[in-house]
Length: 110
Image (cartoon, rainbow, N blue to C red; front, side):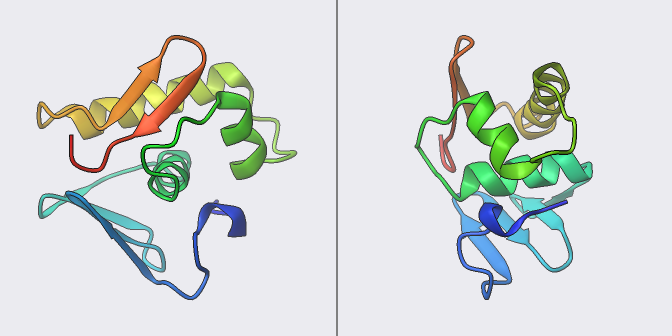
């Protein structure tokens, strides 16, 4: 579930960045005109990362911002991240950059 912290401006209903269009009220994501089917956790993670484009963020920051007190462990986070990466990178474009075990960065137009 998206938290207030994941959305850059709660009055904004749509985030458009690079190849992405994210409709916050419908909780839908379009990549290059194709709708992606994302889990709630994948959606929250993508909104968080697109709200901080090209900024390196740690797993612990992402967990504490998006799912505080929900018992989501770092291993669960990595499963969500890998699943999201696979769905985004089906196009052959790498939108998420990883520095091993440290940080993750969203690149809206690699």
